[in-house]
Image (cartoon, rainbow, N blue to C red; front, side, top):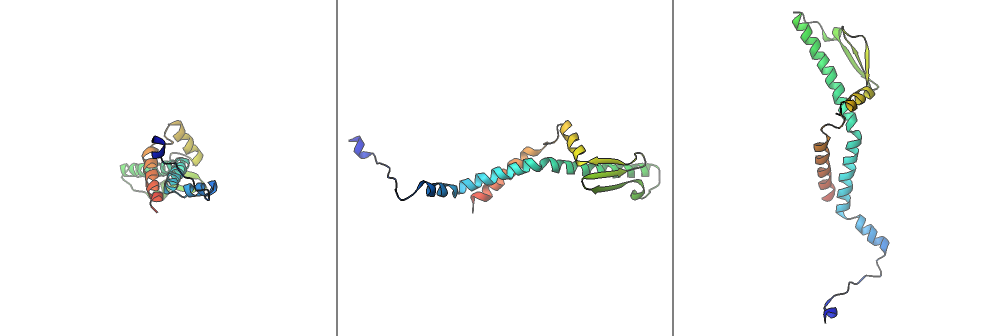
Length: 142
């Protein structure tokens, strides 16, 4: 008869629901998914600060190059320290040049500019993807 050929699943009464849950939580796939999601979320949270850092560094670099270009067009090469002084102190970029009086460009200003231009999360997709896959594999293989 068909009923006799079907096997009944036997449940071991000595294993409690708690120990099954602990066994499932120790599965490698759970750690792999947790590592991938956790790393992706942390990157998404901190990515705007990294973008602001890059933007502020590029401003200082471009200002140094523009001051050198002005100096070479005048056939004199003054010291960069006389034309511009750039300091990063407590999240503020102080720029002093001949053309502009002291300006304060804070991290908040930079984040606001990036947000208004729609560039706050520009380029984040491939970075998040590669980090999530990398951490998935790392936590999957003990």
